[in-house]
Length: 214
Image 1 (cartoon, rainbow, N blue to C red):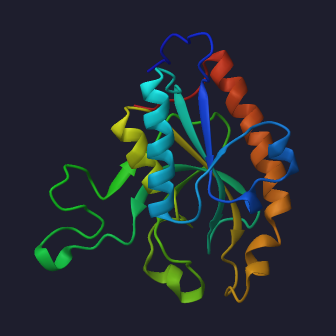
Image 2 (tube, rainbow, N blue to C red):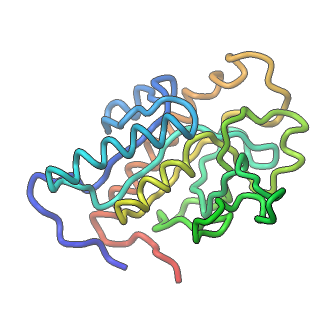
Image 3 (cartoon, rainbow, N blue to C red):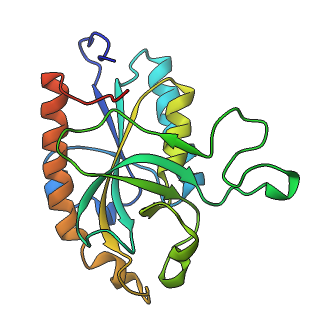
């Protein structure tokens, strides 16, 4: 599925991040992202507002990229991954007979495939929710990574028919979180790795080598 023809003055990519803390000097030298705030509600509001304004001006991007950190109890700490799929761990209407993760009366599965994908970057499943996951909290989550925004960004993208790539650096998860510093200590390393991934992503966009899958 190739991109549509680019138009003069319309950006190919809208970059989205949750916080300024994750937007370090390496990324600042490359991109100017939309900073949404933390959590699915803030992400949904900010991305929907931005895309609505761009749509009114006939300036929708060809691709949205969600960048930032993620937690994982099993992946390499400070490793860089792209989300293969995303689910919403907060959504649970099972008391009414719906599968956990499925939004009632919305014709979407609990886990949704992302894409396209950047060649050469490892894939991992991602779980989005409004809670910070730590310690034993990982036990009930099947996905390898957790964050607080990507599912919401995806839903906004779907409203406008836009594809989403989610790139995540693993900032925590190998031990119990006890303070903000337990999350921020590796963000400088992750900033550099995300910046390198952005370089690879933009090269793939320019060369037409993003992998769309089947």
